[in-house]
Image (cartoon, rainbow, N blue to C red; front, side, top):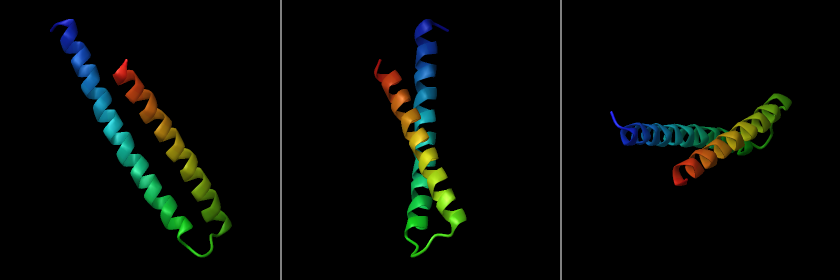
Length: 72
């Protein structure tokens, strides 16, 4: 195996991770939309929605960092 092969594998792994994070982000977004589509949220649901939004932002940040790494 050459150095180029290792870099290629790393790149493929990064791409797979980005795809996984994007899918997880989409799932979180869907759940947040479901919650905010309700006329009323219980206190527990409000906490859940805020927690999901924070998780969604962390996923987005991770995606951006990995995409920047690919571009480097």
